Image (cartoon, rainbow, N blue to C red; front, top):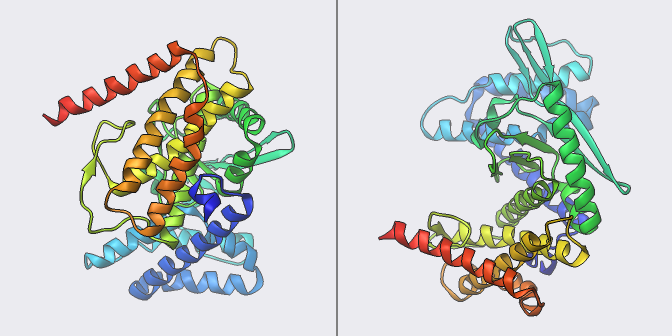
Amino acid sequence: MTELATGRPSVATVRKLTQAQRSKQRLLLEAVRRGCPAAEPAFTLLAEVEHTEPRLVAKLLDLPQLGLWAVEGLARLRRGETPDPGYLNAVAAVAAIRAHRPCDLPGDPLLLPGVGRWADGRWTPVPRLTLAGDGLELRLAVDALDPRFAVFGDRLTPGPAELETLRARLAEAWHLLVRLDRRAAAALAAGVRTLVPLREPGAGASSGWAWGTVALYVPPDPVRLAEALLHEFQHLVLGAVDDLAPLTSPADTSRRYVPWRADPRPVAGVLQGCYAFLAVTAFWRRIVRTGPPPGRRQEAETEYARWREATHATAEALAEGPGLTPAGEQFARGIARRIRPWLAEPLPPESVRQAETLRHAHHERWRLTQE
């Protein structure tokens, strides 16, 4: 738990979290099956294929969008409605096709989850990228086709030229991340397998129901892109931990200021933010220590100064206040403990002043909105 609490999960730990998320998704699907007789034919077909192709079906049942479908289906059942079995039918069709079994396919348009979409006489596959950096690979499905991913925001469906741009940007960011922090890069590669590209600059999101998926705008700046990947991955990790050991108390309904958002956040959101910005702080620290790109030294020093102070103070206050379980308190204290020695690391006075100005301005804007 210590490596998780201090934001340094190993590849082995990420794989254990993946196994736990796999079990959670199976439970969600079983709950839908019991409440939705209309989905039984799809479940039956998947079970039949599993007898001869267990790894094939295991990969399909791990699709993050299938978790989003299952949660939506359970919400419908709670409202007295029937889940849409069509999506699961499509997943079962993928299993049957890959196992060379006969199956019925819907008409046009046709979505095959994780594979592609047929619409208006045209097939659009889900692109797959393999990014290599110093012997370490990141393999991603770039999926903006699946409607389940609409929960993340306005998606960008890349054409050939846009996909090549995405590939080049991601490759540059991946090389940077591997060079800066191979351990963090390896953990990310073990956990992230789907990228949902978003249109809005600066946008980023993840979901506890879609393990392994990050949704974000892919900027041209490799430094900011690497930062965004780490940020969203941290959210996934903490969400997976929270499934195993609840970190916050549902009885605490307070909302608090955080130095990275304009809106007050519940205690769970504060802890999530601290965990994500722990990775952001460590990222900028490594850039400062290893040598920033040309012309970006002051930016790196200011970012490091800003987030080490802000994240440490927020984590310490969170650890001392109400709303956390013992496990959650361990995480808040672990975040503060890891950053504490960094506060003494010298930085140029101008960068420290600029960071303080940014923190003060953010707090003032927030205070004015609360009056």
